[in-house]
Image 1 (cartoon, rainbow, N blue to C red):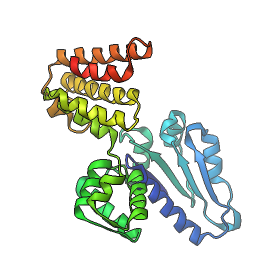
Image 2: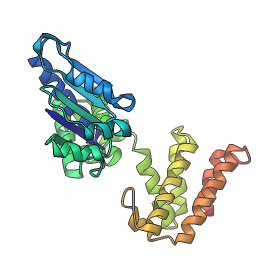
Image 3: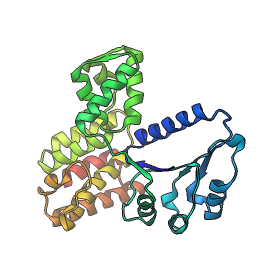
Length: 291
């Protein structure tokens, strides 16, 4: 049996991998036939020897190969190979896999089981949050569910940690608890800042930035996120590809020349901060006023 598990939702893909491992270990008690291979540094010979090698106690092997799609040579050699095995082979990839990739096509050809885990859409995300709260013996209001989804989005690793923290504080989670204990996703807040700039609401943009600074957050990560937002909008304006949080509609508020000028200004401010020519906190507010 061959299985490919991949996708941007690394929490659920990892959870699925662990489910398979637990099921395997219930049936195969020796604990001596589970193998983890780092595909990034794996040769085809090592891969083949592991698959064809004998197992202990006449059990099937469970062979988990991670990061195989970062190894071009290994992908090509596997795709050219012909082998039969009773062992269970799992290719686990955290992130996107191109369907035109030679290994992906090979796995389709040999009828491997393909499992893709995309980030949860809003309705499914809310259902996941409710289920996770119940699993941890808590309750949660619909308003609190909405806030968690707004604040953290589809980062299930952080969702799980924040839910456990909230339940430790009070097993009955409400909107007040979420506002008290959970910090909003910084990248989402930066998007709000850029949106305020696009509306020419510079006072609100500065207010949002000051909120981050008051929490002790560093300037450089914020500046990098602002730069990324404007770069993505520029890419969209040039070739029509929007990469984050529906930037296509926001990009319409700027011309290509505006975006080039703003992006150049951000790089200029970044350089001045790094060379000590301007105070970093003053620099980011100056940037907002000047763009």
